Image (cartoon, rainbow, N blue to C red):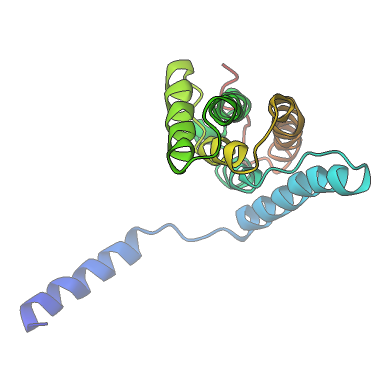
Length: 174
């Protein structure tokens, strides 16, 4: 790297470092605590009461709900609606097309279309659609684990995100 390029690169790095907000230990603490408790409740119900509430995409939902709760994708309508629409897309594709190489892509694509049409975009929903095809789910998958598990995560977010005094969750219901 030439001297001119090196100088520009170093200036860019310095500028980015100055623009980055200083992390707040309290925000990290609340995000970690809320995520642990929210996911912990879902996992506890799944393990201790043998309720089939675990969907791997809930891990991504937890990031949005407990660390980025101001995001439009973390609002209750988006979390619940996005997961349900995506589960429906995945289950329908599986039952109509089977688990083919292209059916996974079709399920995710239809989930995106459904979320766009209903204004319920929730990025983890794409994984929910994929999981429905991959694990060859029945229609009951839409209700349990998806709808119930997402509702539990939302209820925990409502409780936990409003405890710290720095958040207001949800930003909107509908």
